[in-house]
Length: 62
Image (cartoon, rainbow, N blue to C red; front, side):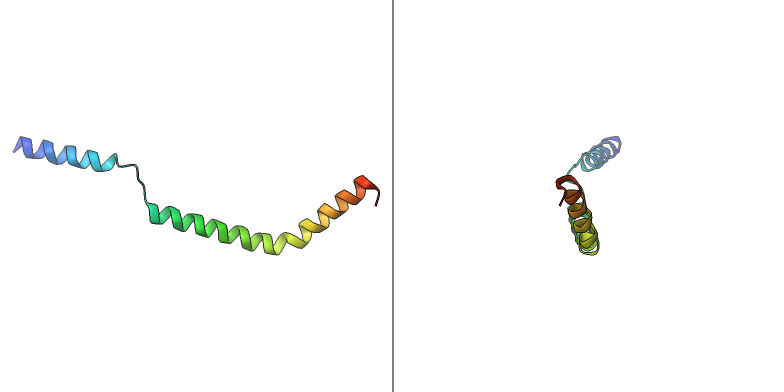
């Protein structure tokens, strides 16, 4: 009985050390982050372009 319990515990610890992680979860997080960046960029692009052009005009005197 003790050997079975020890073996079961060792197998459970071996599974806990598996560092592959939750691959589908990371893929979902990556895709969602990329989507959020694309949406924010699409909304803020005109403002960023205006700020950049104003800064360049201020430096070059244009």
